[in-house]
Length: 93
Image (cartoon, rainbow, N blue to C red):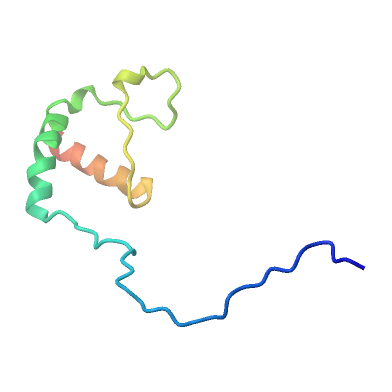
């Protein structure tokens, strides 16, 4: 009886020399605090200058997309909202 599938014959194994394989991920370069301030401070200043126009909403219903600002936070949205409300009170107070 013939087998359904042919046999595959592999060559004898041999040890291969390892070259520099490379790969892996590159080290993540985080910007310094001063660089972050340099980049973000002007934008935050413009945001503070226009605080009286800001309305916070939990749902995007009825918001015109060109006027929406979506923020992605690293922590919980509640902690960000608390920080934002504190900043708003300081600007108004």
